[in-house]
Length: 138
Image (cartoon, rainbow, N blue to C red; front, side, top):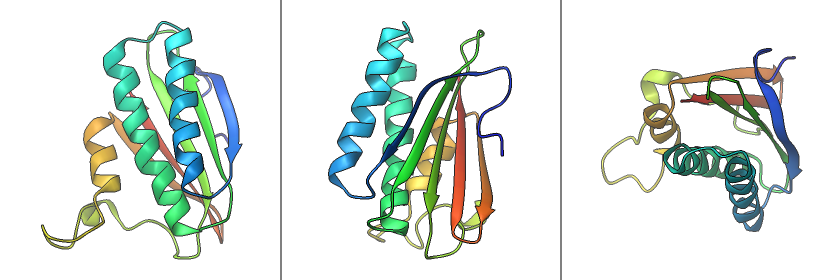
């Protein structure tokens, strides 16, 4: 199981409790880590939003179960955010269904937002109850 491509260097790997209060800590960790490495503000903000959506999905899919974040950078400025989480609801929907059921739906926009902010999004089932979502940003 290779969570990030080989040409990337993992700069942050951390597990968080599967609860809403940990979302802020995860966002703060990502921004701090990227800021310390001189990553530009635009990429920091997009990475923060992508992490927020993926971590929120992880908490919503399996409340109380921890989720793991891997953040990796390559020498050419590419960033990979991988969130591994438990799921009680099966795997995320197919890409064609990423988005709300209708414009008034209160949820269902997370993966659609991630897909618009990232160059690439990959979803992989690691086990019956475990999924990793990788978002690659430039």
